[in-house]
Image 1 (cartoon, each protein chain N blue to C red):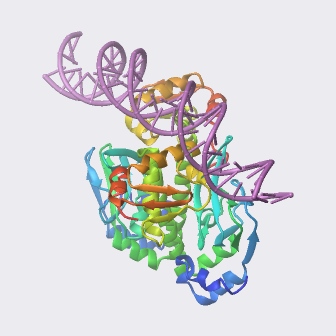
Image 2: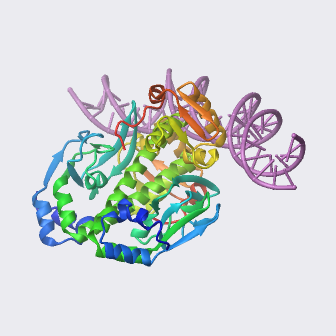
Length: 228
Length: 228
DNA sequence: GCAATTTCTTGACCAAGATCAAATCGAACC
DNA sequence: GGTTCGATTTGATCTTGGTCAAGAAATTGC
């Protein structure tokens, strides 16, 4: 791999605290690969050969089964993904596809498992990362079960706003149909959900969303009481 | 804690491989408590003070927010629960309530975190447990997003059948309304879903379910291609 | 720049599931 | 055994969200 992105990857919570020599060993045993958009990186059911780290671009993780399909997560750089499958050496439960031209660091699964066994700090970071990911999914499942579609959209926007830098403004990544699938609705209903939110402080302009009345949106969407 | 259940807890994947002395330290720092049914063990939002191990009885984990409520998991003995909150010292995302008279081992969160740092085998077991729990939730979320209610019920039955000992027979634990909430539907609709499954090889007699035609049920429910 | 293609939006209609109400079933208690 | 209370089932109706179709807007390709 090129050295340019190494520091940024090394700064990830997953790799931050581990032994420098072992980290170097992980990196030198991995390779950075460039992928065009719409390329399938791996499919659900395959044996987990690599821990992936998205360095640049955009990746969708989805589940497809019985002719149906749903987006589980949109991965933005710089983030590792598919850690749970790698840790337990189990088949991927999701399919990964690039949405934009992307650069991905591929860490051989056997290598990362070996180094995890050797390095307590890496193991602890892995454990913490998995615990946080688990909690994200608890929230996502509760969201899907308890809220209706426009509320889910409202909460998604509030959450994105708090993560993105510019206050009050959100830039959607990917197409709207992708967001619809992530939120568990059809593109048609996402469109209608945006119209519903128009009377609750949200303005839409293509992929640029503005929250002009945060209180009204909170009132409507009833965000989680426990902050992330 | 009494010594009777110690071996069974020690045999759990979480505690199985750790150092014996440290395991003894964990157990002697914990206490086994008996709770009546319908008692709230902890509520969402509270600081995670204890790792819980259900030794006997039945516990519901639920999320309640904005006047709505949904069952996230039904915990059967012998199983630990709420590990993710404890590992990262974060507030519980779920509320726990006993459904039957229950005995629960309460392991102080600070103690288990300390021993995890000291014992690589325990840390590895924790990491694995979290990774498996994560994968369960990926399945649950995909299930909720992609399948309709009767299919979810069918898959639940197939899954329960494979876990319980008697082939073809399932004993529901807890009331049907609980199962309805776990599957993300109303009790009324659960009842209708059972009638739907009647024409797909399922017979119901109170809490005793019989799968008289496994193939027909699979055909209807389209279970996950990747086995758990 | 303009045609072609795709995405997004809107409207009409349909299906799944929720709600409300009432009837039935079953277990616990006298 | 009969009563009572809650759980479950059934039916009628309503709401939400999905489907289908068409038009508007945006993007791509030439």
